[in-house]
Amino acid sequence: MADVGGPLAYYWRTITNADYGTSFIGYWHILALFSLLSAVFLSFLAYLVLKADATKGKNRFMALMLLTEAVRCSTAMLFWVYSWPQEALDFLSSARVVYYIMSLQLFILYVVAPLFYSQGSRRGLVQKFFSKHGLYALPLFSFLLIYVLMNALGGRHEAIGDVGWTYCASVGTGEGTTASGGPMPFVVSCPESWSAVYPMTLSSPTLGPLTQMLMILPTMGAVIAAVIITKQTPDVGESTANNVGELKAVRLGFAGKAVLQITTIVLLMMLIGVLGERPTLDTHPFNPDDQVPSILIAVGPLLPTTVVLAALFEGLVFTYAVVKNDMFGIDEKLRRGFSTAMFTGLFAVLFLVGTEAMEAVFDRGWLGGVIIGLPLIVLRNPILLSFSRLAKAIMPQSFTQNERIYIETYKTAMSDGVLTEKEQSMLNIQANSYGLTASRREFLEAYALQVDDAKPEA
Image (cartoon, rainbow, N blue to C red; front, side):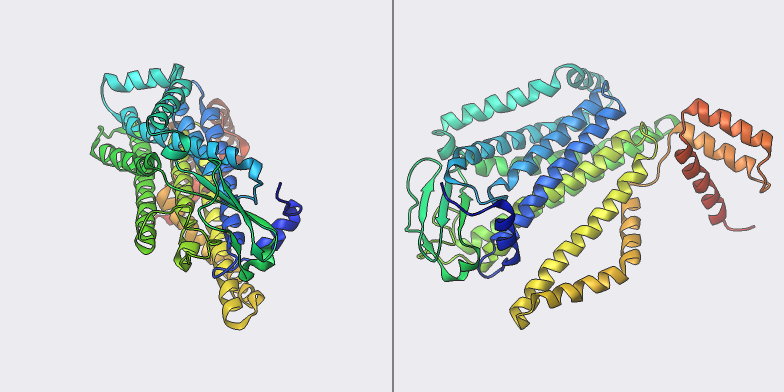
């Protein structure tokens, strides 16, 4: 078993010595850990959807979609979460199979999604299916289909792709093997430029024929769903206003997902063009006969990261679309979460780029952190305000029918600028009958006053 030290010591060693030109593994670790946190967040969104109403077929469908995205995020970069021992190879190889089962399942979910907004019997059938059997029948079908395809193409390692594993204890010759049990196709050479992060292991997946097909399926599904939902034009009326808003939000979610997924394919094609072939076991930084381009180091992990970002965008928009009418105030909480996540992500990316740039130019990485950190701290409020406006454009303010009635009642009561005891009593009765909490009432009343103030004077 390869010994790389304790987890905390290992992460500190690799992340503090992250370098785009040499020992980039710390940079990969950061992105991989981000994918795990994203999986937890998507699982929480699925919980919110079910909490809103677990009996609805649409809610169960959306929860399954979010959980599918969560599993994909958790397995997309699992290879680079940690310096795995050789004994973990079978686990990592199996995790790849799970990832592509979820990719197939996601494609099916995307194609089915527009049926929830169609007019006709198909809508009722799909609602009924996911209300009863969909949560287990679809995963079982996806698993069986991938299992059959894998065996038809020669087995897991041939169809999905093998996983290489290397171990470097110090500068010099290292060790190497594969998940299929064979040796690495080259003599592992541990370069001097990586000495700051030794001892360490590195797992590297390859792309099999089934993998290449399954990689583009979710993108195709997102494009199909976006096109079909765009063509659906339900009657717009007072009774369907919320459904139309939900339809627009879902359409935006699929469109954003499609754009980010297409970006992933473009990045992959760019890497294949630079390498002259798809990644193999020979495409490895510890292969002395194969000089890995810097673009592979920097762009390579952005492929699965783009998949994670697409899942997060889709998850936020879909959760907003489905539960905004069932859970008071959830839309505002999602917008705040979106703004905070965008600001944190911007800070992390700029901090990483800044420290690496200063390290490369002046050999003073901390200087980049200061240059990036201070302006962001000073400009925190304007930046958050900009992200808040973007969040409102993506997830516009919306209210339930009862909330709209309460807002209009409150505006009428406040038309003379004075809230009498009788009017206050009437509002209390209305709020209790609608199930409005005190905090939600405060938000609705503030919103009503804000709208009135925004109206131009006659």
